[in-house]
Length: 403
Image (cartoon, rainbow, N blue to C red; front, side, top):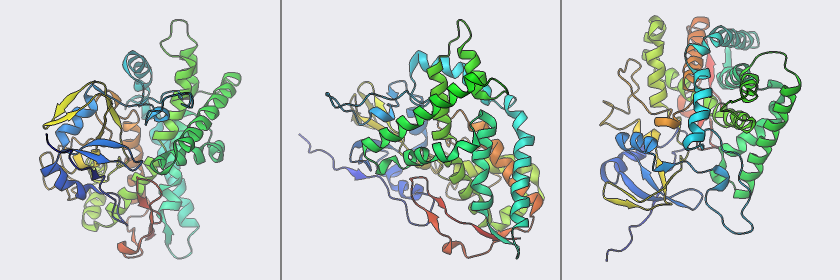
């Protein structure tokens, strides 16, 4: 009988970088499916190759567990589970909710947000320039940080003025790998309570039209496939998936552009290529370095490894997007790369609902920045930039620029 294979640690993030995709190169070559020690002490099967990651996300035998119920706890002290977010819904429940919500985040439906995002971006740039006495500023604090939350609130109907209530719980959950289960549950329950209270407010005040009110109206329609609890889950999902990840990806994308001045200049001279450039920034920046837990519903075998029912399976998009079998010269930023079938938004039935909104936001953010400040550049050496390393989604804490 062979001895059990030693666990590998999840590749660590190098300080001052967005994440560890380069550290996955050896695993992709030698151990594409390997049992690993996860940051919370549990074990899971790391999947690092592009084709395998896509297949895992689409495999009905692999389901995302409730964040409030994984790792599993049994007995009298097991906490009551929270409502599932959209990422955790399964089967017929997920299908009926997705049928209602997904069209709201399609390209055509979101066109109403384009001029609004452009206006918000312009106002932030104007305020940054007006507040600078010497033509320098911190692009994170002035631009990359405030815009995503304003866009999320404007699109969905989340009150911007409530941010001091919901953001602390949202930020706590994004650092969940370092929290106890009790702390994770406390933040989840708090977000769910906030969503319940917000929905009660909107049920009393029906003036205005936003996505939360539209979903509430649908849930109240006789014969609707949507329930009030699904609307609560929508609010929690938007807060968990649509805020900090966009801030951090935006900061990393801007840093990538500013540290590749020749490519930035080419993009400035040919703004019609920004859509292609955005896809490459989504591939290049490890947007989903966080642990994506799936759980096997039945035994299966992958690359000779026997995965048992109940085992955690961890597909790593940040590694898949650097797989040389899928992308030529994958560690190089190429703003003209096409085709570009990255998995930044996952794949399959649980692919990110807000993908089009994220694309639109990043496209407009870059367009407005280059239109208003065509000479923008880093004001300090790139290796001196401080990093926010408080969550698995690492990002520049500051981006000092001049124009």
